[in-house]
Image (cartoon, rainbow, N blue to C red; front, side):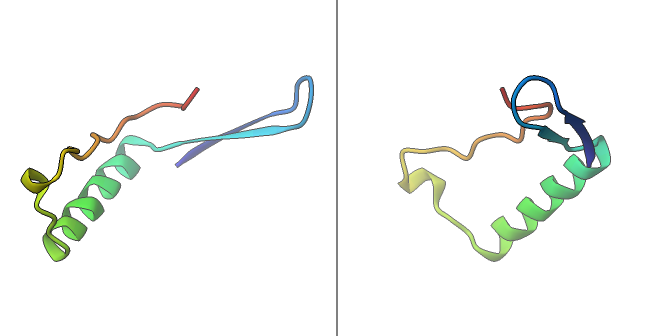
Length: 57
């Protein structure tokens, strides 16, 4: 995980971003959870959201 802290106008803000290794570890963790706790995606209207990299805006 990479972090960045800014203290411009207003209150200080911290930004957190997954590194490529962190993203791979998270994806592996999610796959493990999906195997342990299977959810029938076909029975629901929602599909799982893909993991995204970068900062949220």
